[in-house]
Figure (spheres, rainbow over the protein chains, first blue to last red):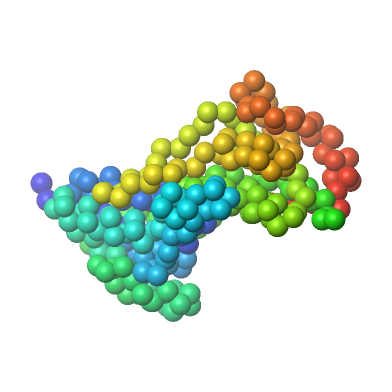
Length: 136
Length: 129
């Protein structure tokens, strides 16, 4: 059986909704099965792979930096790429170029790239299935 | 003296996995440390925050593991016990969702929906989140 390719279009910015947690759970499940994955990070989602995201301590929780171990989506993106590679798949993670320019987040996790809506069109043409997780 | 502020929290579970807490309850706790005088009313889906014993499975992406997933019942207890912030829950919003008052964490007060306007009148500021 040929290797399946799935495309995900994401729109939500990091740290604003539960949609991205769901997206990462789905992406991880697919990566663990060796699927090839395309991700088009559009609008706010273009900040998911921003390389300068930093964890912070949480004084409300009474925890220092290490104890709080605050998640960053850049770590999750990097972990997804590694998970796919380990299981024989690959991830083409595209950050919408105009979206990252608007937000000043044009520094990406290695292994992701700058792109445009033309990439989403190409992904659509080449994929077995597509899941859009839009901003509500 | 700080203005008494009533915070009606409606948005629930919005980004709690990524932030490891609720951003509104967090900012109220942080403002309390700066001298603010807050009260919380949970309404709509946010009433579920008061259910005892809830937990979210930590997110795992490949080798990356979340170690501090959110605990909303614990955060509410912290608000009440560590910061003396009163927490009310709209009674009808609980019953609409099939949640019994016996399922709630200690210290949360039930508030009939019809009593909310009178409660609002006791505060200088009402913020609806």
